[in-house]
Structures are given as structure tokens and as C-alpha cells.
Image: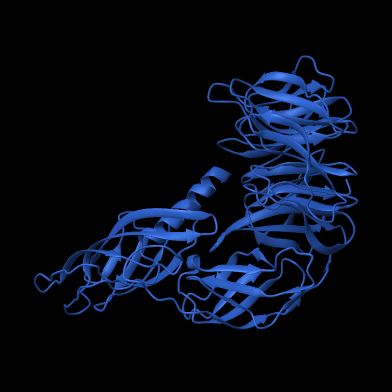
Length: 535
């Protein structure tokens, strides 16, 4: 699922949280009567304001109630309203969305009438939301009380349970933070509303507590959580990022396992939809959120995950050398290519290597230069700039929707995703520039890209099958190494094998010469970017 689509889903979820009256509603006048749960039957229209960490959104909407049974036109929302106006229901916006439990109290801001025994009601109400904002008669919000947190120690990424008394039944109206950072809700008790699960964020603090805010009221946990160093297994390992849609937004994971499989170790879990990952002898680096960063790091053997760079936006790919990390960010003539030292202990202002780019996509580095693909208003570009700074050089133009990019000692290789009239392809150009060469054409949805001394490798998906393919760096016929996949995403290499992340929830590998695939991790949720170390 692309970043834009996810943002749309999150916005619409918020819109439903406003339009379907998820908060606590206060009465501004009017009375009701009727028998057998029909007193609040009818069509209700709700308007209001709900404040969220991302800003303020407004919305209007409607749904119908008949004999106490409520639903919307799409069938995503269902619930019941009792005769005294108590509402209980759930909302499932899409096939991949988590059902959101909802409760509330219907209160009317103007007089209404009951007609006949059916108790049909037609009225307009305004609700005061526990999440903030809105008009009406001044609803009430209880102060949450945190009893315990369990466990009380562990590394960043640990899932902890907070036992809470008297918190709102709608998790979308709760803001949680830990160590001064917002944290997502992993799970919650939708029946008794007495516990919430969150993940410990990356921080340099030794201990910190949990803070819950709702309806303008804030409470801190009575005990602190002790953050311990993470201990990671040594040897040759595969690392990847994955994400899932949680109640509070997207929850991102960084995970690892041995190149031959075994126990899957969680390196980090936190808010955001993580992007690219890279590993070298100095540590593990990843983009924690593709929309606004940050870039995180942790040592190869563990330790505390920490922030390396923040303030990023629209960053998916990263590249490493022994001293620095590089990334592309921004869009619409505000894009930049940036770097920062991997030895930083706190986020510092990055070095800008190129600016005023239209839509920079991905980056790659060699000993001298940083290379990137760029989507321009009229055509795609491949460029380079010195890693120490200087004038950017155009290497190729006229490409159609260029994407992922890699480099070896002689050439730059990239995926050309094509258009409605141009099929995708794999191309290369000399690192000094010149005419571009097409290595493979007529492809279907190529994604991950990697290169070794002799071949270029990529994932591909057609209407009938999905494949791992390779072609010689000198050109020639493409070879299919493995097929019958689900939805392959990114891929990477070591000296003998090709590894890839598959949207079926697996990490797999196959020999560079082809053959049967080996599943080295399964039961995952949306793995996307992947790395292996050592290579």
C-alpha cells in the first residue's frame, strides 16, 4: 500500500471518528420517550471538531437508526442505540482496517417529537469530544488513572501493558507518550477499557514514565520503566522493516534472523511506517517513518536505539558508506540529497549535497559520489554529486518514472517503472555519463534492485506469477531464478544467495544460480525493505 493511500485511510478514519460521534456527547436540551429502545431511532447528522497530534480536522456525516439498530450506507459502521441514548458499535472502514470499537451517548441540542409507536426521531445534535474541540453543552471527561505498567524494564521496542482506570472507550481520543515521545497503541481492552499495550520508543534515557492525555487532562504513571540495552545475535543475518495498521496509526518493526532461518528477533518497534534499511560494520540503520522520518540506528550487537536524523519527509531509501548515511527527501522542486555522520550521538543539521530537485526517489553511493534518480516534470533523470559537496552532474535523462538505483565500480543501474504507454525496464549508464543502455525490457512491476560483480537482480510481478530475475551487467537474456511468489518487494544479496521480502509475510532466499526457495521467516506483517550483513 503506498504512502499516499495510507495517509488517505488515516484521514478518513479520523473523519469517521468525528462524523460518527465517537466521544462523550453532552445534552443541550430536549427529552426523549418511546418504548423498547426506539426512543432514539431515526437519522442523525453530526458536526464537530476533533484535535489530533497531526492537527485539527473537521467533518460532517450521517447514519440511520431503526429500532435501535444503526448502520451507515457503506455497511462499514454498525451499532445499537438504546432507549436512553446509549450507543455501542464498531467501524471497519476497509478490508485491511482494524475494527474500531465505539461507544457514546446521544444527546440532542434541540427539542424533537416522537411520532407513533415506532418512536421515529429526527433531530440535530452537537457533541463535545473527549479528544478536544467541538460545540454543544459542555460534555464531561474523566481523568484516567494508571495503576501499573508491566513489565517495568526491557529494551526499546518492548511491548508493555498499562493498566488504566476510567479512560474513554475510544482509543482514537487518547494521546500516549513515553520518554517524551508519542507512542502508538498496539492493542487495547475494548470490553472493560482497563488496559492498553504500547511499545517502548528509542531514547537515550535510562528510565522514563508513561503519560496519558485525553480531553485536556493528563496523568503520569506511578512507576518508571527502565530501558535496558538490546542484545542481538551475531553472525550472518538478514534484516528487514515491516509495518502494520494499529489502533493509533501505523506500527513499524525492524526485525532480523539468521541467513538460514531461526528465531526472529525484534530490533525495534514504534510509531510510523518504516522505509529503507541498511547495515554495515558500524550498525543497523533504518527510516522509521516514510512520511516524516526519522532515521534510527542501533549497534550490530545491540544497545539502545537512537535518533540519527529527524525532520525528514518522503524519504524511503538510504545508503551507507563507512562514515556517513545518505538519503533523498522532499518533492516538487524542494527535494534535496542529504547526508549526516553515522558517528553522531544526537541529531545534527545534515549536509545538503543537492537541492531544488523535483521528486528525488532513491540514492546509492560509491567511494566518490552519491547517485540518485529523480522524477522531473517532463522526464526522469539520473544524477550524481560528489560526496564532499559540489555541482551535480546529469548522467541520464528521458527516463520514464525512474525508481530504485544501485551502483558498482563502472555503472549506475536503475529501475524504470514506465507508464501506461511504456513498459518498465532495467537500465544502466556509465558513472561518467554517456548513452544509457537497456539491460531488460518489457517487464511488469519490477521493484527491488541489487547488483554484484556479474549480474543485476530484481523482483517482478505479472498478472499470473511473480519472479526473481537476473541479467548480466553486460546485457543479454534475462534468467528467472524463482517464480510462483506472492507479492515480492525489496531484495538483497550476499555472495551466494538472493534474499527478498514478500508481501505474503515471509522472508525467502534462493541461490544465485536458481533452484528451490527457502523460507527463513514467516508469519510477518507487510515486510518491505531488506538487507543482509555481512555480504
